[in-house]
Image (tube, rainbow, N blue to C red; front, top):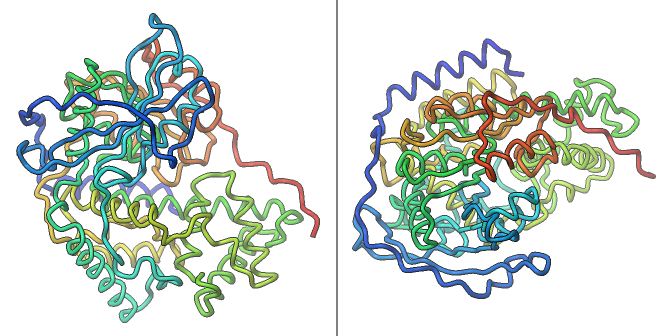
Amino acid sequence: MLTSPRRAALLCTLAATAALLPPAPARATPPTAAPPTTLRFGDCPTSVPTPPAPERVECGRLSVPLDWHHPKSPHIEIAVSRIRASGTPAERRGALLVNPGGPGGSGVPYAVTKRAKLPASVRRSFDVIGFDPRGVGRSAPADCGPMGGLFDAPGDDPTPSGAPAEKRYLAALRTMADDCARQAATALPHLSTEQTAHDMDAIRTALGEPETNFLGVSYGSYLGAAYAALFPHRTGRMVLDSVVGPWSWYDFDVLQSRALLRQRTTFFAWVAAHPDRFQLGASATATRTSYLTARRALTEHPVNGIGPAEFDRAVYRALGRTERWAPLADGLRSYLRTGNPDPFRPATAFNGPDSRNYEAANRIVKCADGPATTPHRILTDLHRTRRLDPQPILTGMEATTCAYWHHRPTHRTPLGSPDAPPALLVASEHDPVTPIEGAHQLRPLLPGSRLITLHDDYSHGVFASRGNACVDATTAAYLTADTLPTEDVHCTGPGLPQAPQPTHR
C-alpha cells in the first residue's frame, strides 16, 4: 500500500516533472474557420440504443477540418447524437454535451444510456448531445493494426521481471508505436484533445447554441478543461466528474497504478472479512496468497487464451467499481477449484472491433497531447512500483507507448482558464482510476470552482452513477438553475459493499 509520505513524494515528483515540460500557452486563440454546416439529424444506426417512448434519439454528422489550425486541410466527419429535452420550452436550458471518458469512449450511444440515469430535472432542461470524438467509433476511427501484439491471446506478462523480460517489454512498445504510425499515418498529430475541443465548439455552432454546457466523466473531465482553456467565453455550465489531473498522461498513469495497489489491498481485506462467503482466506494476507496463486498458475499455464495479461485486465476493470468485487472474488475461488479461467474472460472479446478502436484511439490521443516519457524512466518507475508491491497492475499504463511515438508534440494540452466560469468538480474519495488528487490539482486552473467529494466511496464515476442523492441533487441544481455551491460539498458515500449471500455450491 502507498503510504501518505510516499503519496506526497510521488505528487512532488509529478509537480517537478510538470515544471520541466514546455509550458502550454496561457490562452489559446481558436483558429479562424468558416462556420460549420448546420447539423441535419435523422435515424441512428442500429448499434445506438433506443430510449423509452416517447423520447427519440436522432443522429447526424458534421464535417470538420482534420487540422483546425489549417481549416482548408482535408475534412473528417464527426458523428453526433441528440435526445431532445423532455420539458416545456420554458424549462429548456440549452444543449448538454456529454463524454464518457477514455480517451477512446464512444459518445453517440452514451448520450442515450447516460441520459436515462440523469435526474428528471436535467432531462427536462437539456437536449443531451453525444458525439464520437475524432478517431473514435464513427468519427474517422483510428486503427493501429496489431498494436505490437496487444491483441494476442494469451498476451505476454504485462509486468516484466528481469532484464530480458524488460527488453521484450520495451520492444513491444516500439512495435506498437510503429504499427500506429503505419496505420494512422498523417492523422497521428491531429487526433488530439485540443483538436477534439475545437470539434466540440463546431458542434455548438452547428446547433445554434451560444455556449457549451458539458458533462465529462474521467477523460471527459480533461476534455472539458481543455475546452475551457481554448474557449473560455463560450464555456457554460461544466460538470467534471472523476477528474483527471493536469499532469502528463504518463505521470497520470503512474499515479493510477499506485492507486490501484491501494484499492487492491482494500479488496483483499474486504474479501477476508467474509471468509464463509468467498473462501479465499480469513486474513488479507491469505486472500492475497490465493490471488497470487491464481495469477502464477495462469502465467505458467495459460488456459483457453487466458494468461496473466487477461487476468490483470479483469482485475483492473473490477477494482474500478465495487459492484464488481464480489464477481472477481467468486471468479478467483472458482478458478482455484476447477481450473476454469472463464470468469476472467471479458464480456466482449478483447479483439473485437470496438476494443481495437478504443485501444488505438486511447494511445493516439495520449501521445498527441504532450511530450513523451523515456524508456529509461519507464523502467525506473517500474522498479519503484515493484518495490511498493512485487506484483503491480500496469494495465492502465497506456502512455508508455509514447516513448517510441513517431510524432513528438512540443507542448502539453492547456487546461482551464481564469477567464472561464467556475466549474463543478465531482470526485469519489477512493476512486482508483482517477484518484481524487486530480480534482484538487485541476481546480486552481478553473478559479472559483467547487468540488463535491463523495466520501467513503471506492468507485469510478459519481454523478448519476452512484445513486447518491446528495451528489445528484447538488449537481442537478447547478445544471438547471446555475446554482454553484457557495463552498465545497461533502457527501456521505455507501462505504464498502455488502457481500452477497453465499450461493449453493
